[in-house]
Length: 380
Image (cartoon, rainbow, N blue to C red):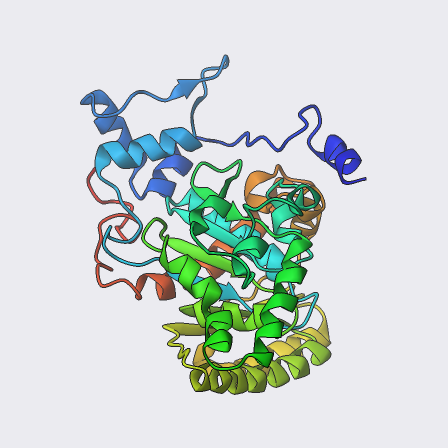
């Protein structure tokens, strides 16, 4: 059934193919330069001229953006000797938008030149499916997250679980139903106690430590529950992004979630696994300001979470809904309605993720790296 759905949404291809092109203005904005700076670099011979369509329109593709950054020394990510920021999109309530936010944030980061690893820690594998990997084919595959989290694994090569995606700078460690078996195996360590429990809580963190300098950002999409998988995610993260819809039940559930986070931090510390989050941010998701109830909840969230709340909520949009139904993000989709609606949706997401990037970059000592933070008017 999944194959039949994909044959429709990816038609005429049987796999996801990125058909992203950018005009000179958009390309310049994405690399942090002006169109005039790119034109000057082309005239000087530092850059190849852009491609041209039959109608004379000049354009760039994703690979061109990478070549431009390399040629002009634009490096938006961390320094080579620094660690990736590990961000968990965490909330144990289902339906709050964790997988959707993870996918969109990964694509946003890739567009802006960051090297991204997505780790799908949910046996339901929604994020894995959105990156066009079939989880049912991975059940018996040793190159999965479930294999490396199992206490029966020798844990020799965490990098072997990393798979390519349609995005050149996004890799993924996919999930599968086998991840549920790993959770049961990890839970069994409780009977052994001591060192076995500590290793069970740290398995994901140990694995990430072997590849943490290979990426700028590692995004964790945890399951909607706080078992051993959730604790592994909490132990591995260096930053938390907590989605909360502006609905009463979700708001009340998140209050309980915050209490649970505090309790689980104590559990981790009691078992020799302390955590140190560089930032914790709440993001209001799927917000419809025209609904009085949601508007009131947004105001309450502003009063409750104060500086921990991102100033921009993620607005509910048919563009996001339609894109995810086609196993895509808005960033890799064409408008499903009007261009104005599509542009408003992307601009809103850009503002939200831009705030998270500010928090993310503060975790690197080399935050003054020339690149993403450079003004658009900077000389090439």
